[in-house]
Length: 307
Image 1: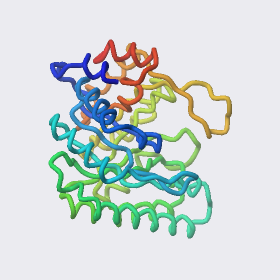
Image 2: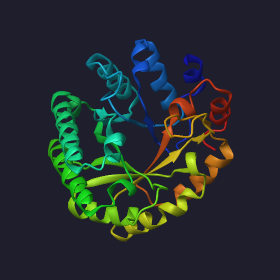
Image 3: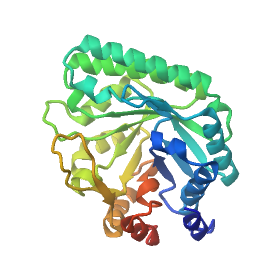
Image 4: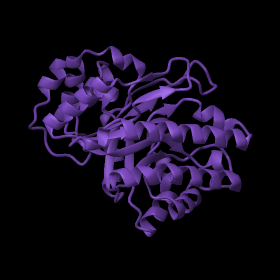
């Protein structure tokens, strides 16, 4: 990793993709302070000037964890030294998708209240908003249209997001961000209609996942109605460009994910679309591991970055 950082000097050219997600897992906790610094320096060397940490910890699964305050301080210190910004993802409850599959709306409401309480408690106690690099909160849940088709659930979602985002906006003075994507599962509700209702009720900044890593370039067609709606109402939004391609999995039940870094030609096509998308920011998902990882595919994409 030190060699990667050294090979990507600070003279890397300015580029339209200046933000990247960083999806942390419990395995990251074993990194040495130097290894944390090297990864941040590698992202900076590739031209990224903002990191969106997807979440600071997870709960509800078999191995709950949380980023230690000392490690978070190190990340902020290094970002500030390099002149980078940090959006910070709140704690994530891994029961999210299982809960959405449960038809019991009362159970879902109880889960949402617990997730909200955990997130707001962290936001109050973390001290992150006082750091120079802090650029706002990221709500680490993905919104798609299939799970919220019932009118009662749409109301529940709007109420929860408002109860979560309003205190965060009061704390920071800015709207929190949350990701969204188009589900291929059938349903009567469109993603554009879902978001039209949400934006009537809640101050949020949607991050549109382009979906190309899983579905190919045709994924932009499914996003088109949402994109048109956001432009028509002049709503701020970001576009997330996926730098991976999903590979066939040994299991077909959706419980495993197998992927590799995308080739530069496909990423180039994505970025040509992104330049015309009129998003406030284009975000890579994600420099680590799909650009700075040790695989041959990551090395090839890194050599051609920006494509």
